[in-house]
Image: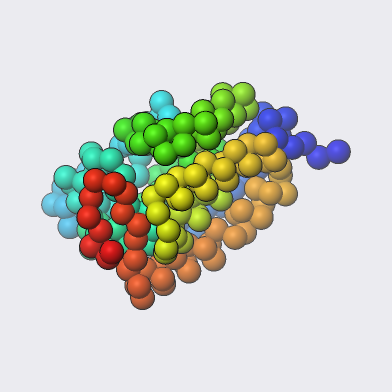
Amino acid sequence: MAKRGPDYLQSLDKRRHDRAAAFMAAGVLLAPAVLAAVGVMVESRSFNPFVVQDRGGHRVRKLRSLRLEAETGPVRTFGTFDHRATTVGRIIRPSGIDESPQVLSVMAGTMSFCGIRDLLDMDKEQWRATDACLFDELEAAKAETGAKLALISDSSLWRKSVVNGTADVVARRSMRMDIEYLQNASLSGDTRLIVRTPYALVSNLIHRQLYETDIALPGEDSAAA
């Protein structure tokens, strides 16, 4: 019988699957990631193309896609378009190339390839205020399963595709999707997520170019509202 939920998340099958996916992704993403890093350095006039974020007690490295003053602030928008993005960021952010440095962490075993994307530490109180019961249920599920921070997730792909809705709706649905993943994670489910991801990211990039829509969270006006 195939392992599911916490049994799968802690299994050798999960670790092998994550690392195999990371090695394949590294081969595909190497050239785009290098070009993106050069573009970020040229645009920012800095030799450092990376930004480090604190997520769930872990430090995560990404290619810089937002203006310097925005990188240290809380998340204010979800969706295809973020009006704080740099010129390069408007390509690498919706396409997911900004996340490519994390492939190395998956290869090292400190992250999972498939799973859940934790919030920035500075944003957790905002999500708890949206629905404290749901937030606490998710935190308990993460602690119980021992799930690692992941590169891709169902909820993060969904958030990238959001066009209409409110910040509260986005938060609640994201938390429910993450809880469902932790309860029902499986090898077949991770495989389907990997297969679906390239299509979702390409669709998201095209959508951004056509519509440039976003959802603004409380505290910041949306340029596309």
